[in-house]
Length: 384
Image 1 (cartoon, rainbow, N blue to C red):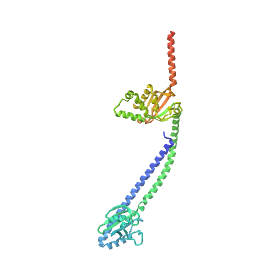
Image 2 (cartoon, helix red, strand yellow):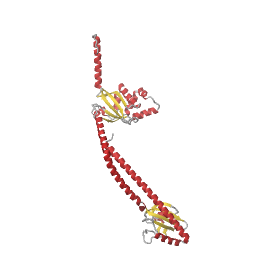
Image 3 (cartoon, rainbow, N blue to C red):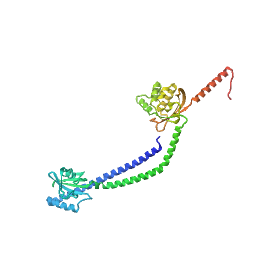
Image 4 (cartoon, rainbow, N blue to C red):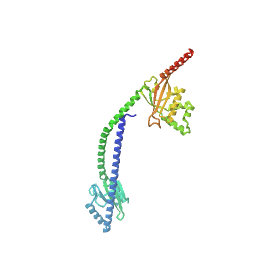
């Protein structure tokens, strides 16, 4: 079981992570909404200007008069936002020529830019006949969001654009607000989490320490075993058509030895570590293979059969060689709740019954000797 403090940190980290994920989701939603609205706005402005240009040219029938009217119109009602701008341009050999004054000329008298400069990508798209929204660099090299359109009857390109920085300004403001609110929620949530859950975690910590002490300082050896390999082996046998696992295990003692080698000792308690025989401090059970006798094999077979049949409590008598001498133990095998299918958490408690068995044998011998003595002496006894 992981320490309570570690679990507390994990839960707190999960809470903060979920809050941050929510923040990122909200920011992404705001970003998409801002761009979607601004693209629709640019498109509406462009369509409106395209209609105005067509009406003026249809009324005047002259390009110069149309440009003069447009220049006056753009001057009186020029743009939207601080950086919003309408551009009209045409191709003059290898040069993009702007037919009306630009709003932010990079130099005095600026009205054209070479096609090969890599700048004015929205206008190049418009003059290429591409209609739609795009990101690109304008004549200043600024990153902009633009809507491009081509006016075939005049061979002009129309660009409606705005600096991307201004486009994303609402997103940045909303992002800062969301971040601020998120930080406040994290701080408040942390305080509430600490206030509400600290007593619970403290209680869990006390219970965990109590359980650990019971495990560590039990008077008898306790092993925490991972028997998931046994479960996988049983599943393979079943899938291969073997249905009677008990008969299969009884057919050959070597199978029992194979299963023992698949067990893993996860942890042993203090009593196991201070035992005279170092076998109790092993991280695997392969040493059992060297001390398997008929009784031991029968006991282990009983445990494996019980695990296969889904028993979560199994008791059996087993023998170990301790300092070269056989000692008898009563093994209590328990599968922890929730691990019945995987068998990756099995607790085994060993109670040394060697002395008890010796007393029982002495008592039986004494009773036998008494009975024979009475028979030899032709004596009898009654228990009233």
